[in-house]
Image (cartoon, rainbow, N blue to C red; front, side, top):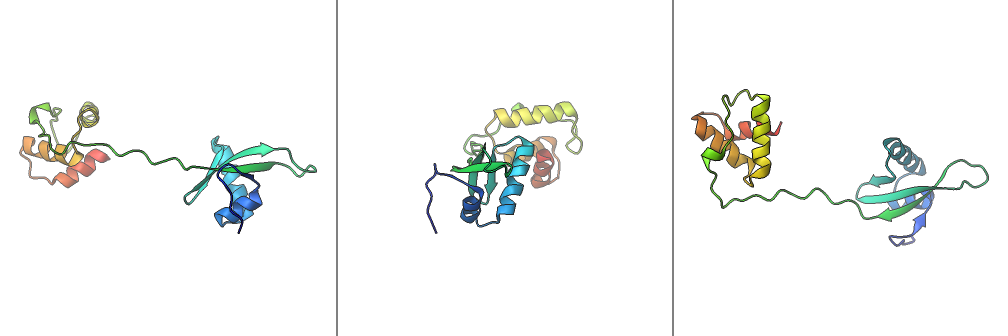
Length: 144
C-alpha cells in the first residue's frame, strides 16, 4: 500500500483506499458534507478536506481530498477540588424538584463561573435544602 503525506492531494479512489471504505461511500460523505455547508469529511479517526476540481471529459464533479489533522475534542472543564464550596454563594432555588427558568439560568451561570464540580454543587444544594434526595439524581436533572 502506498503511503501518503499529510499535504498530498488525492482523488476519491485513493481516499477510499486510505479510509478502507468504498468510493460510493466517499461520494455519500462528500454530498452530505456539502449539504451541511462543510468542506471536510471524517471517517473513524481520519479527516479529509475536499475541494472541487475541473471534471475530466465532462464526467461531472471531481473532488481532490487532502488529509488534515482531525479537530481535537473540546477541552475538559478544569475544576477546583480543593476549594470549599460556600453554601451562601449558591443560587436561590425554591424547590429542588421543579426549577423555574430564572433558577435554571442562575444555576448554569453559577456552574460556569465557579470552578466547582457539578457533583459538589448538587450535594451542597441538597444539604442547603435539607433534602433526602440523592446527589446523583439532582446532578442528572441539572445536566438535562
